[in-house]
Length: 179
Ligand SMILES: N[C@@H](CCC(=O)N[C@@H](CS)C(=O)NCC(=O)O)C(=O)O
Image (cartoon, rainbow, N blue to C red; front, side, top):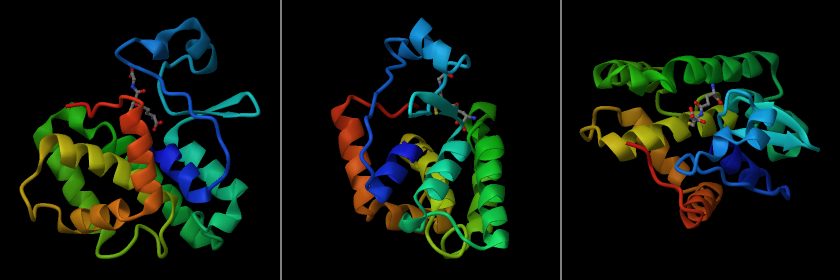
């Protein structure tokens, strides 16, 4: 979903290929040849596979600088990488380590985020963060007020046409929110 949002933000033509976990399409020989780990997302760049959300967002941000989703300044770039590393290594796997652990990690993310965007202006780290909180929030329904900064960020993200478009397309393709 995160690369999908980024592609809609950029507005570049792309071919979407939904992968159904229910039908085990991420473990077909064809898919495993592209990503032996059997995971999404996977971006094919002229047929060459690129895995990992952070790498795909970094690539799209740099490849399409006119979209303004990747900072120009070195320190801001490092902050975006820092956020995306934290999201991939701590936020993404948090739910699997139990609800209490996940709540602690989201509390850290909430405090780190504060009232604005992840890094100065809206960008790739926000898309990555939103994707994880969107899933956590909508499957586990944390009490209102527990993560005020993430909640405000969620609503700002939901107001974006690229996010609405992504949800519309993924829902039509049969995406179901995992528990
Ligand atoms: N570190 C990877 C994690 C990717 C990942 O865990 N993807 C999940 C979906 S959110 C997946 O493909 N799961 C299928 C499986 O594990 O069988 C990244 O950040 O891209």
